[in-house]
Image (tube, rainbow, N blue to C red; front, side, top):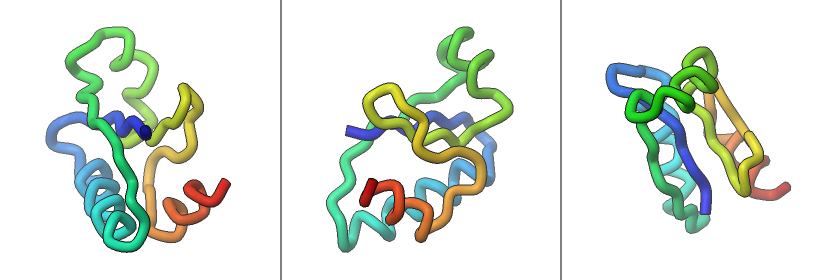
Length: 76
């Protein structure tokens, strides 16, 4: 299970979600989305990095997340 940290009005977050949907068509990718503005600690930790994709509490990707980046992260 992956975790995608986002916030409202974030174009990079919208782009990351679109890339996840595209990858999901070929490779099942279950994830939960968490709004960093719902938690002060998360906001402090990720406010300059979002979107952030994590698995098992390890940051896999952040910032501008592309299709190829996602595929490579899934393979590792």
